[in-house]
Length: 324
Image (cartoon, rainbow, N blue to C red; front, top):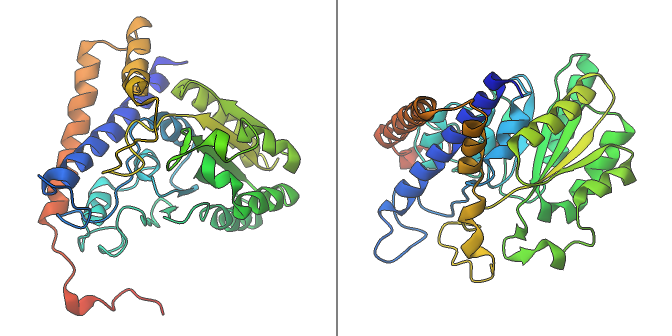
């Protein structure tokens, strides 16, 4: 891989992790000594994507902000990699008026028309809207594509199978991405799914299916390059499944008593793993690593400060921005 591309992937992963660590810090800051999910400046559930950075970085490296991305309830990594404004995103997570949805949606409902990004707390919800976007792009006759992201647990939903079928039937310019982090909340894949890889399901819908092991950002990048090129050329959809890693719990406050592999999880962290690979290859040194960390920290802390200074929505505006 070209050094510039490798460094870009690394910097994207560092930015994502830095943002997630900052949100983790702010989320728990006022939920001590006793954890209360409803308390604090960021109330409610919080699903963080630490460990899954390679999927977003590798896929979004081939996209422009004219392409559409629909993500899951664990969306921050794809939002960041796709170029969603960090300040507006942080403000939305904090529930503030300067957020993407004026503080109405929170972290699971990030909508950004500028980058054609959306996500949802409903499992597999993003697949049908991605098809609608892909159909529009196809009829407009341009080279734009849609990317639909879901977890491996959602691959058993009807929307997943209906969307694959229709996308293949109409040869829509869409790439389906499945993030397999081994756990559907607390249920292991082996207890919920009859196949060991959802990539094999693609054959049933007459499209290429590829599984990427080892949470490798460079392997994801290569697989996405093939799938995106196919979609842009009018050759139809593809499916990529990445065996990734949920470094932390399903949600913050998750005790993870169901997870026997917990002790070995930090050792599989993709960020230090990729950094070590780049150092061995002579692509990254101490100065480059510091530069990436400092640049990410500056952007993230600026976004957090922006969110905190933004006002909370006034009660009298509760009916604003409501369609029905």
